[in-house]
Length: 286
Image (cartoon, rainbow, N blue to C red; front, side, top):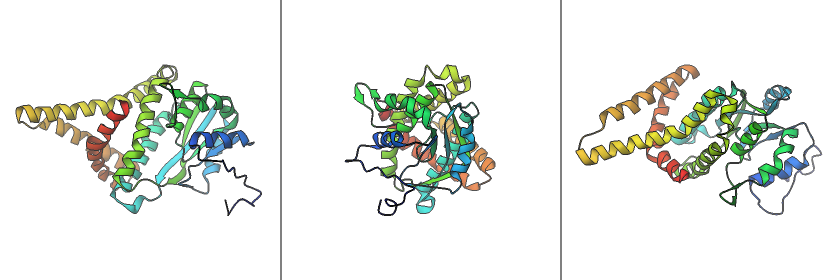
């Protein structure tokens, strides 16, 4: 504020109190005047050409939102930040890139996403007044706004050359606290978007349902293996070997695609996934 308040190019809105991301977004959007609105999270630094990369995608009036590729700004802080950086690469260049082929990225991530203001204006009332199980929603803003865009008939896109570097948690505690509302949002907005999916594409239906069922089935496999060990005293070697094989195949394919051997190290994320994220996702679903 001290640096830019007197700069005529900036209009800084000071809200009377901390109202959360959603209401802050809405206050800014309602004061905006341009054709496009660029959302940037406070811990994110954009590459200098991000706007030039995103705007061409928005030339198509059918596109309501376009997101850039996320990287970990503090990738070298710890082993965890290196894994999260690879996790972001996979989320962007596998999941979002595949969904973008059908013009339906299911979650345009807040650190770097450009919206069509006219599309936003028609959705703000729905976005602001979202309730879930009788309570105002205070999580999952990015995913819910994307679902509203798709329901309104707009396309959502991914631009891999628009790079945004965001700060990621460097310790397990903050990382898990970050993942909990994300998991809740994934389950909730998948339920809200089930009627939408068949009208978009069969692949997208399979993709989104698989994203939600996959972790639960993996958790069931782990529990079954533990039960076998406890009840029979025999190790579930077949299930363990299957998980190892699937992990190594996936990491090898990504290492070839990205031409970076570091992705072989992403296999270590499997331990975090099985022993920490799966219980957290089950808790989030409950």
